[in-house]
Length: 165
Image (cartoon, rainbow, N blue to C red):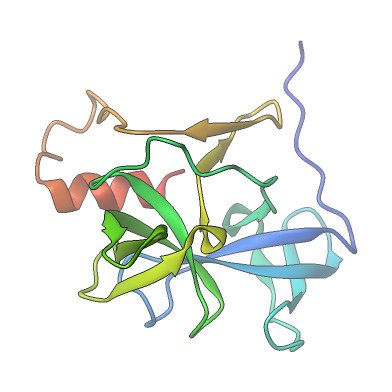
């Protein structure tokens, strides 16, 4: 099968990887494509309606399909959490079930001290888009690449898991 590039068109719902000051690691911000030429795009952000400046193609991905949170979610698992304060999907590590309610989880935003108690609806399983435009869920521990022998600390591994998927 020939390699084909994913097409993003005007009107498509996408997410943009942003490394704004709100999170040390980065996060996904949702928007709708208002213009694009295949190399860069402008978006209308879902959270405020403002139009972005030009955004490089490599920072843009289609909005992933809904991914159920794994049933065996446990402390230490990495998920994405929707942070209502700044309307971003952030990489987070599950700390455990909230003490008061098993339908809520305590999660720690990766790279920050912030711990949120969130309902299951604000969590999503992490997914990666393959080169053939198929979304693949990432669950539980992801082995570090053998080409990254220096990436031994837990914080570096969490950063890599969140940034490059």
